[in-house]
Image 1: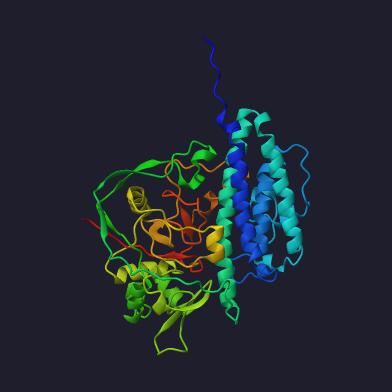
Image 2: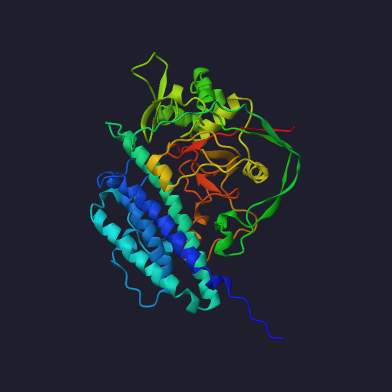
Length: 440
């Protein structure tokens, strides 16, 4: 008896793809709507980019890797945008020096928003044609759409870190948004979550399709022997980090890696980024700059300490008599975590919530967590073909892995296998500390 063949799943995802595309793109516009055009031009440090550039570059990504390849007769919005908003993809040609992005007074913000609307319309046309495409092509479009979603979400978090640094470097120290009313629960006692030695699966086994998405640097899944270890149930708090500072943490070379101690001396570090001594309180008190302006450290004692470099995280762990987890240990613990869902960034939180880390259940959320693992390829790693292969693979040198996401990570973007990476001196990210130790 003849049977009806099931519909190709790669041709039936149109409604989900279109809804997700609109949802992701809307959060970028929500950021822009809360900032002035002048705010969106600032580039306050070499790692940062202007918000206007983020809005344009994420649009360039969809135009470059989807519309120009899969939408017949697509006409670019502006031929100059094809190189102007390229970030680092050498296979696609030349691009401006990153440090010059703040000089792009033109195109105007209005033109960039028109560019977004133009490309969004093109993406809608492409998705409408999805059912008419060969199955392999439809699958590739869906895969690239998902990469585009996650790429834009990465830039949404970068908007948060970049605008925070821009406001901090402004002599007026403006607040992005007034501080909302909030009450912080006391930090839960730290428990040591213990794991027996064994062979654990690390990484994400991608099937190449959007419904089970992960970046290429998260694969292949592979067995890795992990000795007995224990990991802290909570991240290091402001209260604990103050104890490290009061105990001379920034004055004792013995606690620091050599390069870290050099950074302390050269950069004059005495506290995490965004901390300053209060001029209105007793000597020795601190206040912390947030997206809501300065807040007394006394109000944030039970929140995770953040904006710490790898060097500071490693020095604190040394001082505490513990260490940072390896990324295999962290992932093993995260996959076993039974904590409730962490609070990640949404349009509602952006508009009304507290835009600062608070203690989260489980290992996800609050602030990115430094591991002691260098950012290197997994055994058998293969970057994506073509220019997309430059997305992650070419940065596998001189960087350390962070795990877990932060309060500024958009909802739906994080997973236990996600590998973030930054140079060890980086402090402008929402990065903090979770301790680990050997044995049982």
